[in-house]
Image 1 (cartoon, one colour):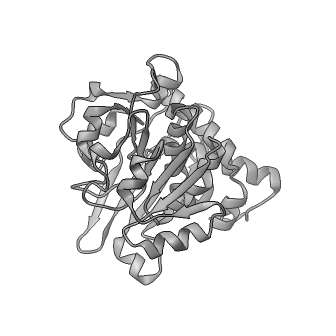
Image 2 (tube, helix red, strand yellow; image 1 turned 90 degrees about the vertical axis):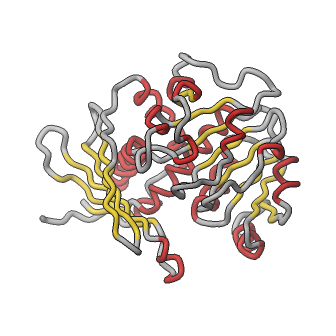
Length: 312
């Protein structure tokens, strides 16, 4: 079976996606998912390609190939292009090839918004998304599902981009003063491709939750000093490994400073413990997220009779 990007979109319910991601994080921290380290193939002066496999009992063997070519943006092509391949766990026979570009975007923002659901204060009313690209747009779709925000803002290095993105989302406001926005927000979601921090530690107020999904080695959008002020949550302890496996902002830190999201969801380690605590979630993107999202899309495609059967 093959599934196009449009077909994948029709087969992914965003609320269900957040729930399967939560179960995936639990299984990951419980040792029930095999996730080998991803391999990176560098193409000089152009980009790089990542191979990301994952498997757990009861699911298909899943392999995502994602190509990251920053120059694509100027050509009107997404900078991240991906396909996801599903194989039968008993025979290894190919079962499905689906577009992975949309899944890559929505599962990454989904993990960040899941962290909002689980770690932001229950009375959080104001959220600010920093960035105006694909990830920022997905955050704007997902954030209303986890809190009844009175205001959701978007801010970008280029205000025109923030205005254009806000216009696509009713009720979202574009702002141009990032410091003022962060200082008055309960939730701050970083979704940029910045090689240096886009916010400052002192802007983040007590009780805030900050998430970060941007990947831009060797730097990054999240200020390391903020981690010292708050409690850090990660997808897996591999986040502290060197890139391309881990997060550049966490390089050199003791893995003990981070709590796996799954450990918190399983009740093995605490989440937010006070209204004044600052919580920080740093994502790197892991194959488990692709596996559970692709499984959700594939099962719904079967139910709907969507997709095309091809002979290899």
